[in-house]
Amino acid sequence: MRLLPLFLTCLFAATPAVLPAAGAPSQPNILLIYVDNVGYGDLGCYGNADVKTPRIDQLAREGARCTEFYVVTTSCTPSRGAVLTGRYPLRNGLAHQLSGSPENWHGIGLPHRERIIPQYLKEAGYATGCFGKWNIGFARGSRPTERGFDEFFGFRSGNIGYFDHLYANEYDMFRGTAPYKVEGYATDLFADAASDFIRRERERPWFVYLPFNAAHFVNAGNVPKGKKPEWEVPARYLERYGWRGDEPDEKRRYKAVLTALDDAVGRVVDQVDALGLRDRTLVILISDNGAFMLPQRGLEVASNAPLREGGTTCYEGGTRVPALFRWPGRIKPGTVVREMLSHLDVLPLALEVSGAKPLPGRILDGRNPLPALGEGAKSPHAQLGFAYANGTALRHGALKIVRHDAKKPWELYDLASDLAEKNDLAAARPTDVARLNAAFTAWMADVQRDASPPAPRPAARAKK
Image (cartoon, rainbow, N blue to C red; front, side, top):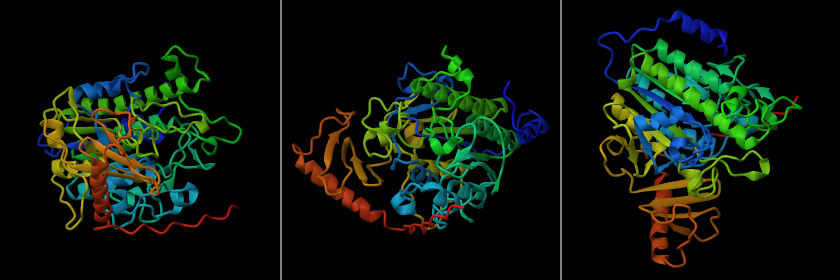
């Protein structure tokens, strides 16, 4: 039997399992699960018959599964800044991946001028908790409990070892703003902390941001020296497939990591349901970007099928991600949403359902997706722009232009007939390229309005 850390055990034991009191607030609870580098083709509900993800698949059956849901940037840091602000990274001032230990540990990251979901919801009376991967700056004023979260348990950096909790060879787990030593599998620790928070705050509306580090790869700096970097997972999840607990095959180990993540998601959702909060809780599960396809590491065994490429690119494999929404009574079970939606839409959705007020004068790039999710309405977006590193793209309708070098010509794809982006139509349809290029140029100019200047980047500290 898995043991909970002492502080979670005490909190669970101290709180009786009772239903919400009569007259509980009508505002819905919001559970935002942000999984890490999970590809479009990684889950059972998106067509992967080889992986065991029954709880996430159940979530899809109980709500809406989106087939054209996008992140507008394809790396961990800017994706998180975008979902929490509802603004393009080029507008919110955090368009790059925080580098190594200096920025992750000491950088401002997301400019302090930016306002994120918990800051809005606290003003509407919500309890707010963050459990897992932060990765948008940990300087004074940038930490979760300084940006609207009542509680934080997690890590500062981009990815940690699942068991040893190391990043760049330094221990990286925090509670609030202080280092916190804890043992256990990271996926389980974050799920348990979120479940405990939900239990304690059940009598008022709450917002839980649950950014798992799964299923991010590990590297040499995330494990103790001399230990082989590999997909880390408790043996019981490998054994569930009938494999050895020390199975060496990385493809098999990755599937087990996904199954461990699936279990954790299920436990948190079960906590919501067991407390009688199911009907007034909006559950959202989104991947922060497509699975990475960088084979030189030897750990890139995930799937974005049937899409092209993966994370860090602006092809569909990097930008189109799994996204599920469950809200009984507002979203019909088994709904498949084929409209273009985005992680930018999460903040406007939270404002709409909570009654929280937007910041006067603040431009939001997201739009309320609830009509498309629950009422069969069309996409609220005429187009979406994409940018990360040297890659840029723009989708308008079914057409998409993309390039990964500003000095090279645009590629053009018709996603209605060519989801895998195999047939470049640019030479045959120059008028469409010109039209989308004009839209892209206008978009690049627009994101400068109400923009936050990027925060200064800290210099690397000398090694002792």
